Length: 457
Ligand code: ADP
Image 1 (cartoon, rainbow, N blue to C red):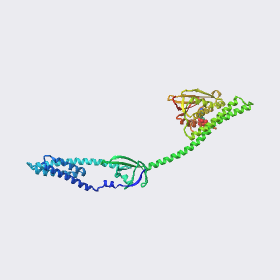
Image 2 (image 1 turned 135 degrees about the vertical axis):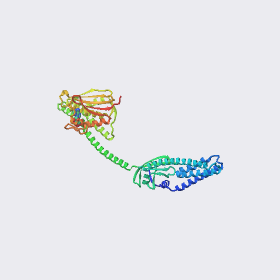
Image 3 (image 1 turned 60 degrees about the horizontal axis):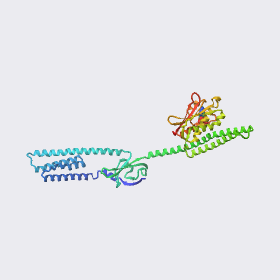
Image 4 (image 1 turned 30 degrees about the vertical axis):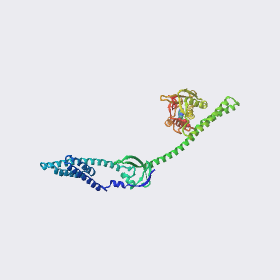
């Protein structure tokens, strides 16, 4: 990263200060006058046949460009004077007025050039000033240094104020902590050519202390939120286990009761007992699988996606709900099956969603007259290629007071209900990139349908 160092900024002061300005002016004026003398001598010696007076523009331009309009005018008038004096000595005029007239015209021409050059110089200086004003007004610290010697060529006000006479020794781009200002800076460098053509490096240092503080705060909040969400997830996990295990345990109890009744009736063995015991074992296995799956989810979030035929999933869920439906006197029906309803899903989880929906509809039709105790399941593929599994009943529909919050956790109208089934269903479906919704089933009853992204095969 970056370390603080002791590079002097005196070079900047020297550059912007007035030292040496007088010496430079004297030097420029001396050079200009020397040039005038040389041109005058050459013009005189060549008998004015070569018309060297145009060369006076050289010292005039030099003085104007380096020192400004006043110095330019001085050199221009001197050149015109010298030309007039020396020309007169070599070329007698019929009337002195003509010589002075020509001298005046020459001087005036020189002055016009001086005015133009001075204006041009002023315009350039102004544009330079604008550029410096912007740089000086910047909130970021800006510095330009010689790429080879690392001498500071320019440093703006913010840079001088922040780092004073000893600029930090800057190496790599990125954020760094400055010990002296006790602040964080973001350094961005850019190679460029300095005004005199030498390779230089533009460095911009933005104070990012506040942004870093805000970032740290957000990070701390995120960590706290993460811890809280893990606690919530743990709570949800415990509730989910309770809820999901309820189903196989209830089924085991039902099949156990059936076995006991058969045994009490005097029969010791028979196909009914064996079938009930087999179902008992299947449900116990299912309870084990649910625990295993939930543990896997907790250890490594994200379901195990495998392409499945949703109609097969629906059939398996219907089989699992069979015992409960039988006991409630409800007839189950796989109404329509779409052969193309295939999706990449975690089979156990989607089966569990279908089973949850089935349990709800069985409970919804339980109080109805036997001929109305019918529930149906269907699978389909919609126009956008999503696969749908819908469970419908002909019960009283979802009570109005819970319709809005139906998929929220702990929303229930049942005396012993946990209100977790539909919220778990939604979590599972959303984890599969799908959506679940409730709608009225025509004139009577409820229809729960979930849609999942299809595989299209
Ligand atoms: P629980 O079954 O423990 O109450 P759920 O989340 O499965 O929890 O259901 C929440 C509520 O949604 C139920 O209490 C019930 O009021 C309503 N509900 C769910 N399915 C149906 C349905 N098929 N018909 C009528 N109401 C339903």
